[in-house]
Length: 347
Ligand code: DAH
Image 1 (tube, rainbow, N blue to C red):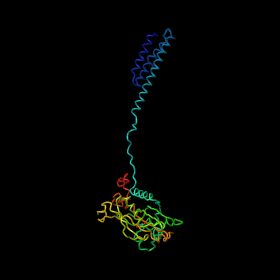
Image 2: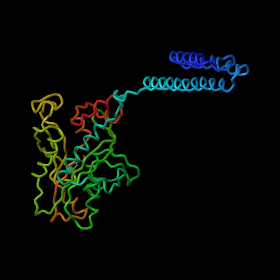
Image 3: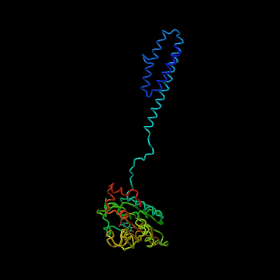
Image 4: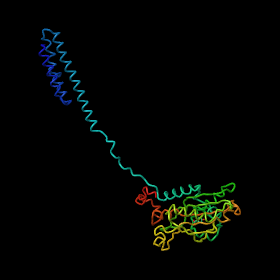
């Protein structure tokens, strides 16, 4: 084969390769050269007529090598380009903001309890628990409420047997806690817990929550009514408003003497008088008093040596006041539309 012819075939190959854009075109070119009737295939069969077979073979090889190397080069180039285009089109933009995940919220009562616990723990109290299925003995008898005591009528109870009932008050834990001490020792506890009574209207639910408080110390340390007042003042101001005052009204509870109902300045009208406080300027929030000597004695504390105070607000009421909730039943229905309103409204 003459040099001129080889060169022109190789030039042709290079020229055509240059213009190839996609894989299909490349495959077509392969057929054009190496297919059954391809240019190279035909040249191969021309060897029979060649006078200098060796020289012809060498020339042929040169053409083949050129074709193959250009072919591979092109194939790689096209594949690279396809891959790049694919990566580009499938790129994930990690800077896009993610879909908003709905988060749950704490129940308003949980927020109330947590805040009260934080406050009392900061004042050195322990948080204590007790059974909800309670015995008549701890719920009443050890709290100066013997069987047939008329003050039992103040609490409509759920009895399971004659001796077992769903506790009507967290005060039961006062007795349990005092009795649990081998030797009397000073006590400073709060007892947040569920309580049960046969009540059911807009301001009473059959299950509700109380937070019992009990402080007992040696008489010589003078735990007094003033301490009770100061404690409830801090309680009311932390939960309901910095500028509120409290007032004590005489009342009766068998387990305290003297006993009080404790009002807080109406946080809606600040004492002026409104529909919430029934024009009185005050709202009843706490029940409290100085621990009755019988309660101390019946639970292992000598009332000549020991004394203290107790209090027991309902946490539902505090929650309702704190967040302006008009009906106690909303707290127990788990209606998502209601609960969603407390999203991160911790204060
Ligand atoms: N346990 C009482 C009730 O449920 C409330 C109460 C009153 C608790 C006076 C006390 C207290 O600790 O001292 O009606």
